[in-house]
Image (tube, rainbow, N blue to C red; front, side):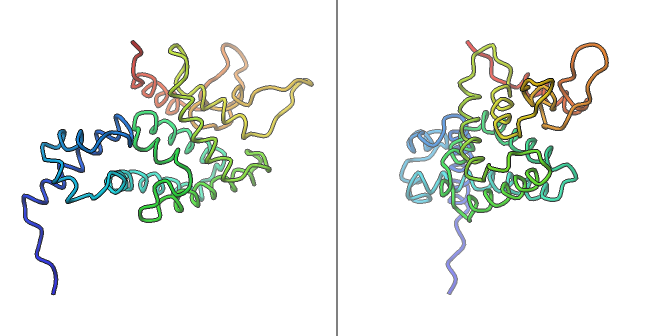
Amino acid sequence: MSSPPRRADARRNRERILRAAFEAFAAEGRLVPLDDIARRAGVGAGTVYRNFPTKEVLFQAVVTARIASIVDEAKALGDAEDPAGAFYGFVTRVVDQAMFNHAVCDALSAGQGGFDAGGMDEQFTAALDVLLRRAQDAGAVRPDVDIRDVRALTAGMMQMERLRRPDGRPGRMTSLACDALRPVTKRNETFVSCDDALCEWCGAPLTPAPTGRPARFCSASCRQKAHRRKNAAPKSG
């Protein structure tokens, strides 16, 4: 015999709890107390516990859908024509999202097993590994790098972006960290940063400008996206 349908008020309470939890985890991370979430949702702590026995269960419920959309994006890039742009662009966007959503940052920084509801951690790792291997086959990533290195470095990028100096350019620390993944190039017998020859947004190769200032973006689209992210970055003080 099937269980009776959930009462309308109980469903509404659950939805309110999930909305409040999403806002709280995004703003403060997984350490936010359940009592605070209950207060945001306008329900008692007992109502929260009846729906979600532990804070970890609630965190998993909130973050799984967001991570699932990130996994879907990675899978869609699995056969992209530009493996380098797909890999570096995806990593940059993931770090960018995590900067403004503490829940995503906490989940992805936790490492393997950190948000395994629905097998999301395994799916994220597998999809990212496909992008990594294709970029390596294209000569855009060092051959000695593996997916564990990328997961660890991505978590580091998230923290570095949050700790960057107040006058630092958003994405600068991510760009520097990505340089560690790229094969070192040599020009005029001196080593140069790949950051000088690749788009700051998606990592695609830049066409050297014959005159004027060196290009920073491969297209007007990437320039606009970087400009929007800069304007969206929280102001210090």
